[in-house]
Length: 105
Image 1: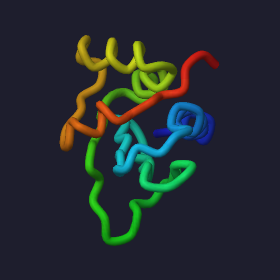
Image 2: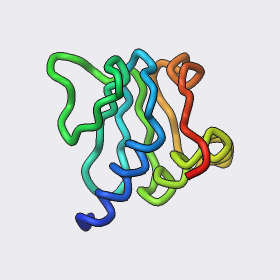
Image 3: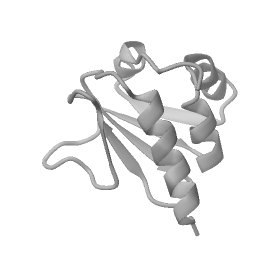
């Protein structure tokens, strides 16, 4: 079961990481707990516990909640988590190239 604090940690990490629009929708799907959607078509991107209406995500990220939170801390952390297999990414890989994650919190 996911606690409110764990959900808040993922939401907070996403809010900090996705400060700039990237023209797509990403679904963060932790192995434990509810997913989050980041609508990067908006400025600033919108983070929601509900899927944007009538749209499918362009990119799906899966992994343990802690791995997703850590991956969102920087571009290098995201790349490392992906290469190490701590998170998986499915869908439109061009979304990954358009991301400009905020660094250094």
